[in-house]
Image (cartoon, rainbow, N blue to C red; front, side):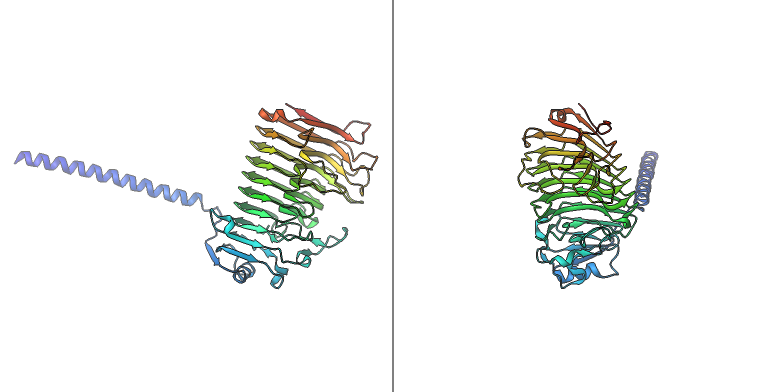
Length: 423
């Protein structure tokens, strides 16, 4: 009897220990869940979801004023945009609104703007610039906006600046995400833009992840555009590019502060591919293309890790005109003016480029990189300005890139415009 009591007592003690252990594990798990919930409390989440299956439902969802903080999920199909709908048929995302196609299959959802007329893209112009203001097909920039897992087809008319545009200047800081999309058929595929004085001091934080930018051949023909533009001051754009495939465009990417002052662009590129464009990358610290304006005290930085810049051979042909684009791998300029600008109106601009393990191969000979500290578009005979500086760091296999360096064209006697390369 005593032995039975001892055995029972033993199992009772074991049971108490196991129960206590389980209680500790449950308590720890609950604590971790509460902690995780607390950590995510400040991350915006669109809890409202609206499912659409045709173009009528798409327009109704996007234009309904009640649909802020909403994710619109699109069923497979082609959504042919029409000027018969509000806002000339453009799609303008509301505050914290996002569009999502079919995860894993961006080709299954197609937003097609090919039927929209030129009038669909007109917006009030800056009074000092000729012609009407223009915008893109899908407009973002209202709080936090995202577009994912779909195909966007632009308008064949050069009147549309872009297929996807960030010029809804509604909030002073905006967060933009475009991921897993195919963007084609536009003048600019994805345009990250602060424009006009209404964007003074505005900050855009953008990420472009795993997109394909292909056959954007209308007008400028850029896969990606990043710009502070048209008399804007103190504007900032921070952009992360990762695993994008940019090919078959006149220019893969053009980033610049154009007719801007004291503005900043920062770009980080990781494992992107700029292939088979007329020009792979055009990076300009500043560019003044109008009389009676300036482009002073701007900066642009471009840092790339593992990005490929290959087979950019001048076809499709880059745009012609006052910009005088040089085809090939990269064209980089500290400060530039056009034939329409006054001399000395692009000064104190800086362009920093850092390349780590980036592959250059088979770009239009003889140079992978054509670099100018300052450049005046021919036939101007006066320097663009002074104190325009380009710094290029080539690390790892990036050091194999060939480069042509021109401190100033035409020559600036004081020598304040410079290009420096570090290998």
